[in-house]
Image (tube, rainbow, N blue to C red; front, side, top):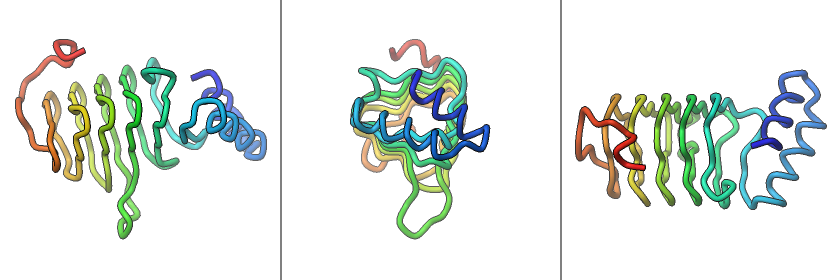
Length: 143
């Protein structure tokens, strides 16, 4: 996260070439694509250093999220919108969150789920395509 924070700092200060250098370092050292342009909330963490995580640079991720390895958060080929993820969301390894959708706060996205529709707050989703399996959950029960 330190390289991301440095990249984000320089991006917000309009020093995009320096931000880009940190983006390249993230890609080289961690084999992931997390850009300084991406808005990631406080205390969000990446499991296993964020190995193979891909996050679209316009995606928005809330605070206190946990993102597993091999997660993709991005657009769909014919859509310009990208995901917005609420606070306290746990995204398990291999999950794909695609398109102009919103993931509510306090949600759990199961391993290898493919989420292509918006999800309300406090839900557990899994499957391909992801479906709501449980509502009114406490995400802490799942990690």
